[in-house]
Amino acid sequence: LKQRKNQSIREFAQEVAELGRRAGKSESELIARFICGVASKEVYRELRLREPTTLVKARQLAENVAELETG
Image (cartoon, one colour):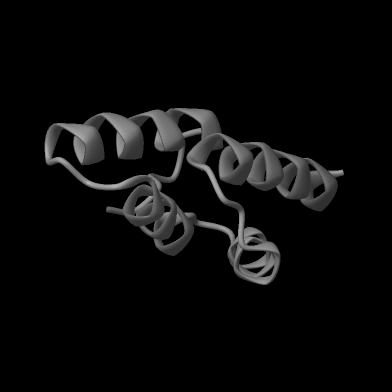
């Protein structure tokens, strides 16, 4: 699952959560899918470094990094 070109981080996180929960995935599996699917390499790096413990925290961190990235 990959973040689409015009899809916001929030929308992508919601998609990961919905599809993952329907498939019975754990929180850690949802986080891993989210991290591996984000479009920005900088966001990906930060998420891997900080190891968020929930999908909500991962989304918040990703949004913060993306905001800094776009200035």
